[in-house]
Length: 152
Image (cartoon, rainbow, N blue to C red):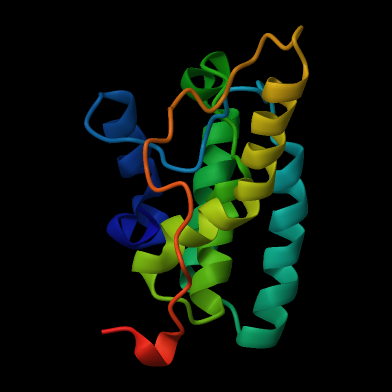
């Protein structure tokens, strides 16, 4: 999204298109946090530290401008669309040299322990009302690990 915007001076145009229903503001909004995601505050500070080591990325300037405008725009405030933890993490992953097609995996890895904890909680607590994940696993019960050298 930040690459598509291209530069800081094009953020206002992008915001206008989003408000007109011609695009999506990625990395904003959260099902639970209806105000600024506290994890986003932390990762934003981490981004500053990463760029002190790797050099400043022009995408960060676009992200900061996008956040500034969105936080002041009644359209986004009314809809409770604030930056979430993923808004700055993609820029950090890029600075660390990860290819963009790995971002979804990198977003999922830290969430895995929470997903497993929720699943265990759901199984062990008969009073539990939240039942995520809602999928039923139908795959193999157990699979043998094939060493990487022996894989085709």
